Image 1 (cartoon, helix red, strand yellow):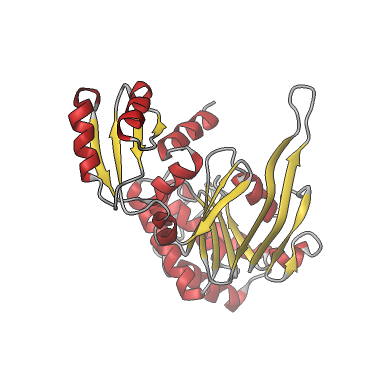
Image 2 (cartoon, rainbow, N blue to C red):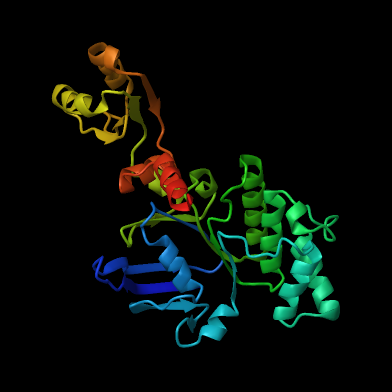
Length: 323
């Protein structure tokens, strides 16, 4: 349903900075009916790719086909197949829920009985049925996001693109939004491509694509990605992580990865991490603040491939958004 082939995009340089390649020969195929999560650290090219997919920017080279239509040669036909939920709100907070939905319907030429039928479909899964007359600025963040998704569903899209749609939501609202999105996606067999750095949102996705530096590092099911790291690993926290790392590698003969104060030993002997943990405690107990054996999660795969933790990304995002 979405075919991205050898896509490259380079931002031109100026007197202060050289040209920068945001997307570097990226190819990705998302079949019809798949729920795909796109993740990566800041600067990985996710935002640029999203803007290109939405028709807001033209790439330097490469092709994209949406539902069989060339996005650049047949933009109207391609965009007619999809709807978009942006990271920044795209609803008028001074209008009521119903007014926002009516405005969207008018833009797409929907009226009369057809509009009423689609309105019922769009809000049947939400908590908005008794709030249609309420202004959006009286709603919680989670309900406001429901308005965004309901607005997109009015057009019965085959494809939905979502850019960090749960940003700013509390954990409960985030979980409810994702569960509702996945339920609708399965019922309507829609194709969903969603950017996110919250790994709990990706656990039930069909596939997870990980980008870094404009390149696609991996795209596979959550289970297959976790399997790349083996069965288990030892993770320890130490305020002396920098000096402790070479000592552990020399004494245990095991490669160690460092992320700030965290050290990860991803290689185990026959999948058994307990002897390694016991030896670490015997040798360096005074240098270790905490230590644990854990099964690889998607976040561990992300850290392994990109060198960034979820906390790193959240901190960088806050720095970008700060006035």
